[in-house]
Image (cartoon, rainbow, N blue to C red; front, top):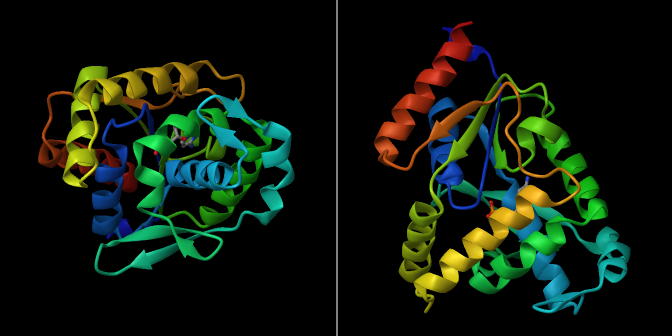
Length: 232
Ligand code: DC
């Protein structure tokens, strides 16, 4: 079978485009490793927040940069959840990094070149032997420019904010829809206008608009793209 071939799949796009949902399903089907690079930036933001380097109205870039060698990130597979959870200096922070509070700080932290340098290096190491599905903002452009399959996910800001709002409510967070929409839109601007590795579609990426697609429909279409690459 052609499926013995292990390729690298890069999925990029704005926040809440549903990248991780599809990436996890696809990784499971093909028995690939899934890496959520947004979780890595979120964990660094959480570290910065806890240690007083970043807050709503301030960023101590030099302080956080100076502490980067004290930040140890690790993914450990959780068999019950079916995906790997992120650990910050030995502590499971999978939940703590998903709050609106961290979402509001993370774009500032992700714009720091020293942070990106450290995380990109770790991501490239994880994908060295292929068989990986990685999602983020710069996977197809910077981390794996030679990935065999690059998908650029898009969906309207309204659709994305509604999805994120539902997700946060289901987790028991008492959030306001307009705050979530504002956060999604401001992160769009920050992530696509920052100087270092802004979000952009790689020339050879396939644009995939999932605004009106169910998860099942997305899954089917993406698997078809993967099968085509595996057969080529
Ligand atoms: O995918 P996410 O919303 O969990 O990502 C959190 C933040 O991290 C997002 O605002 C942009 C940043 N990010 C990045 O700059 N590069 C990546 N490869 C992944 C995420």
